Length: 155
Image (cartoon, rainbow, N blue to C red):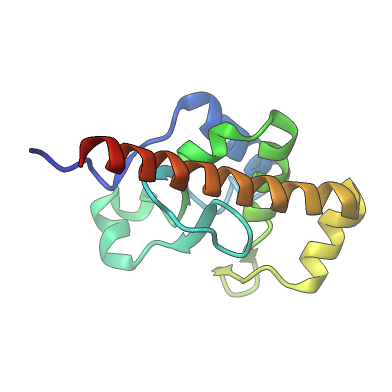
């Protein structure tokens, strides 16, 4: 029996949600982004996503100087369960963790902090933000229940 790959391509329409937020953040001129589906990615700061800098060795293997600088891992199964408005908010929150300094030509990935969360919450409303968090938790719970049912049937 073959194992499913841990990483795979994200459906193009879902990747486009992240690319739109990335473009609005005006990062695409200085940061090369890869968005991938990561199976069973756990909730990270209430989101089904995780942004990381690509280590230099991997950047080299992904295209040298033009290789990826940042990868956003997405639990595609969970992200797909969200409605389009919630998907856009999750993408915006994830992209907000990425910053680029022109002074020292440096990319930084920061953990969501109060300032970023407040900015996004003020834009969309605190109730909406809380709704997104609750929806993500429900989707994870639903995914776990389905996995448990599958195990019970196949056992």
